[in-house]
Length: 325
Image 1: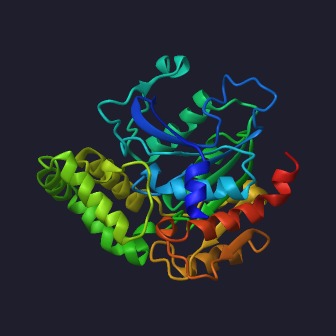
Image 2 (image 1 turned 180 degrees about the vertical axis):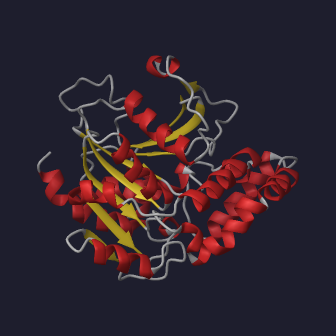
């Protein structure tokens, strides 16, 4: 079954300039340009995946393919890298839209606020305004999703899924207590270490190391994620992580209340980034919301082994909405 999906489902890779930053976009399905496709077969809805940190979109391809298949291949499923978390190979052309060429570069694009504006800039320049959206945010991508809804309330989002959502008290979480000193106080030590270890390393060795790690964790990937060992990308991931620890503190109940009817929260039982007590708190404050606690022991990093299960949950939840499209 998995091999059939791999062969049959087309995934198109693009590197674009968005807000002044190189950005990898992976498009699952036959639709590669929604803006200029005026055919009657153009889909009315886009499923848009916003990753966690590090924001390597290539890791989400198995999840995107599973979701595309489970929604009967009717709608495109796209995933975007975070700004500065992907660099185009030397032989890969970086695409530029006429709209984006006139746009101003986003201030501090590698930081928390810049990453939110980066996603909104992509939707403005690559997705028609009348196209309905399903947003899927994972980890810090859930925070980005809520902030996108807050900044552009009329964004045509029919549903938003917040998977293992790091939307509050990040530095107080079990993992946050470890990550905060590393990312905030020893950030430059991490930068220097990454640069010294990986900058002189030939790409063949990097590629071999990544393939071995992917084999060990049983993660299939048809797009080489060399950026995992690229010092520039690692530094940007650490920079973003430091801002997460400092700024993702108070849950934004105002935006949750405003958009509650379209939000689905999915918490883990053993998640050290957003522990069970965070689920209990939000469930108490919003008892009428679609706020779920995982019953399958799926970890925070579900993209390693649980793509099919998570895609199944999202697809089942979307059945009624998609039947109307």
